[in-house]
Amino acid sequence: MKVKVEVKEDALTFSVQNPIRKNAATPLEEPGGIGLPNVRKRLSLLYPDQHTLAIQTTGDTFKVLLSIHGLHIQAHERQAHLLHY
Image 1 (cartoon, rainbow, N blue to C red):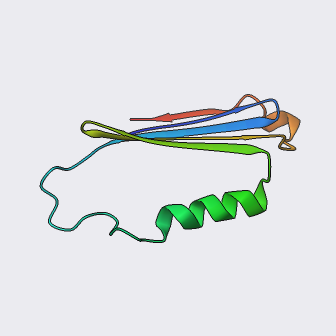
Image 2 (spheres, helix red, strand yellow):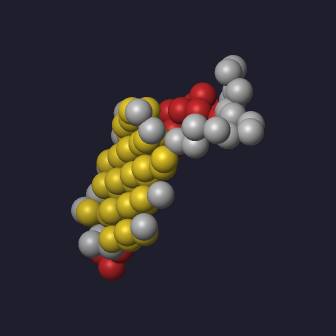
C-alpha cells in the first residue's frame, strides 16, 4: 500500500494505491454497495466545485486520487507533506 498526502497553498492532494487480492474470500464491496457513492455524495456536499476524485483499477492495482482546492489553510500548515509506504 502506498499513501501520499500533500498540502500546498490552498490545495490538498491525497492518493492511495493498493494491490488487488485475487483470491479474496469476500469481495471488498458487493455490487450495489454504498461506499463509493457515499464518498462522492459527501465530497459534493462539503466541497462543491472544489474537488476531483479519480478511481482507477488496472490489472492488479486499485488507485484513488483526491484533490481538494480552495481550502483556507493556516500559514504554518501550507507546506506539509506526508508519505507512507
